Length: 289
Image 1 (cartoon, rainbow, N blue to C red):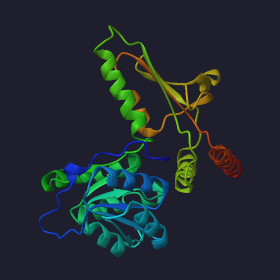
Image 2: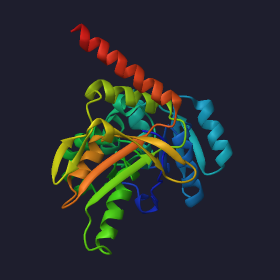
Image 3: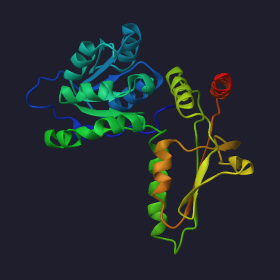
């Protein structure tokens, strides 16, 4: 969900599988979207290897390629068409998936990359993609293929930075009583991200948030759910809501000897309206059953 916060340096992944001819080192699916353009721009800046941008709207992809210059090229790809998707993946050593929504695509692109023996990086992914690819762990290892999901900010950096900070703190502090995580995005969310939010709310609902206290999950009291914090520029002072997506819950559950809480906020009015609308629809449907 949201914008990409981290572009992994992929140069070490740039070798093609020996049994296939690759016309490009990196293939960016959804390369004309806001996240895809950021990834393509960073790849263009950091490597001289060929980059292939794929998307349904060829004109938009061509505009991105023209802005970036050689060696960036484009091709039309429909990720919902297995043949089109597999042809694209087969041309690339590394497939970077910036398409969405994840709730609809799920593991389609990851599976196509595996079939074509391509490395795979997903800036979103969510737990459902990781779980669907876990049965292929040994096969990926035997083939020497990398499969990286959650390479963006949510999930991704929202778990990586707290885990790193906690590990570093343990080397400098005698004891750690609690860890509180605040995360958010200062920009607008894409339509695909909004659709993933709606999918998540419809699937799991808006249950009372939980946190870890003395090694046990406990339900948050209402005064604990919303807190106001000043996190500095450019975000400033804002209202955070206790929230724990599956990836964050897994991280917090691993904390040993300390309490753990996670808060996030949605700066986009559109995101807030969508969330409220989805919750209202869910409550109406539940009351009719």
